[in-house]
View (cartoon, rainbow, N blue to C red):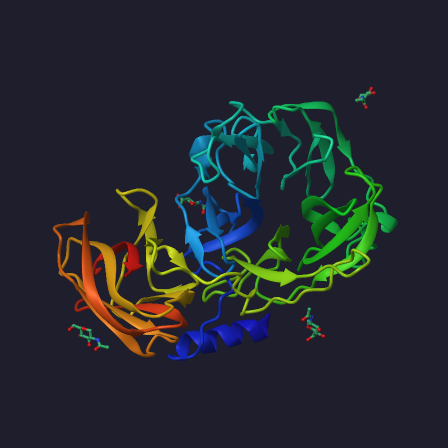
Length: 446
Ligand SMILES: *[C@@H]1O[C@H](CO)[C@@H](O)[C@H](O)[C@H]1NC(C)=O
Ligand SMILES: *[C@@H]1O[C@H](CO)[C@@H](O)[C@H](O)[C@H]1NC(C)=O
Ligand SMILES: *[C@@H]1O[C@H](CO)[C@@H](O)[C@H](O)[C@H]1NC(C)=O
Ligand SMILES: *[C@@H]1O[C@H](CO)[C@@H](O)[C@H](O)[C@H]1NC(C)=O
């Protein structure tokens, strides 16, 4: 991924260039994507690598959502280590699945009583949470990680997990207990391919299984060949195999020595979610989630995918005439998100020349004004509205003044001109001093 990294660095230093859209989140490091399409919206649950991390010292999960695969709305953390009083650390790779009008979030965490990795379950009435501990202790524990969950057409739910082995159990209908034994999948060369570099691990299977079904074929996608890892997959006639090794889905490309797959269908295309180290400061413990689109070959195989900086095409344009959350972004520079007193998140920690890109905004016949929900305990500043690039045509320039508090919200309106057709929209923040300028909750054109 050296090429991608250099390319991104060039983007980041080159004002005026079109911005890359992978990785999909830029203000924090994210890892281990678990996508879920629900109610015509794509959600990606992730882990959160801390800035400057030198290990997988992760304390919370995050969730992002999109209707266009280009602009991602950031949501408050849906679940953290604190959700599980019996867990001490290692908020690692999980997956959410809906059932019985609830959402179940399977995650590996360290069980403080044993010091070993166990799998816990969060439950919520809403997809974005917050999730609560569904059981009050582990669902199961065998020192292995990376749960993936799948409900077959006959209603039987399966939980697979494991590093270095691959395990499954059949979950009961209420999703928080299982029946039968923990079953270890036999890792054969036919099923998982021959590993060449590690006599202790005879097949390519390493970790991060992702199970799903398409056209009567079951897919087991996984991280292979540590380290560095690539992504491979196997297919089979049932949710319990037997598995047939099907080859490489995504090669190692530098950056992060691990990877972690997730696959969903959305609209006309299929999407592959993974992580890399492509953000500045990125690496094996400071990872970032990215997305590629693909179409299956006619025989059901998956074409080998490359990591790209462009990501998938935008599915639908963004409507600027309805309220849009400021934390719905294709790319950002400098800003962070924080919990908002009006619900959800707001953009905060805004400094001079930070910016947000919103991709594919359909202005149509033209906008005449812009409203922004803002707050500032400082002196405020300006939101410049640029088209196409961060220093492209200026269609408006809104002055924000102090409101007496970082959560003391007010709506500011300002005139807009020359905003017609469909463009990428850049909010460029301007102001004096080194303190934060203001916070930004939502926006809407008229
Ligand atoms: C892990 O992160 C937490 C929260 O930032 C920090 O308090 C703790 O010292 C870290 N532990 C290690 C081993 O880095
Ligand atoms: C579960 O494991 C036990 C002990 O290995 C074995 O006796 C039993 O037959 C297994 N049950 C099933 C349903 O496989
Ligand atoms: C991935 O990159 C390789 C090497 O550049 C290229 O041959 C291949 O066509 C690419 N695959 C896709 C799906 O673009
Ligand atoms: C927007 O207004 C601010 C405050 O007057 C000013 O500093 C800034 O230069 C303006 N931006 C542009 C592009 O004119």
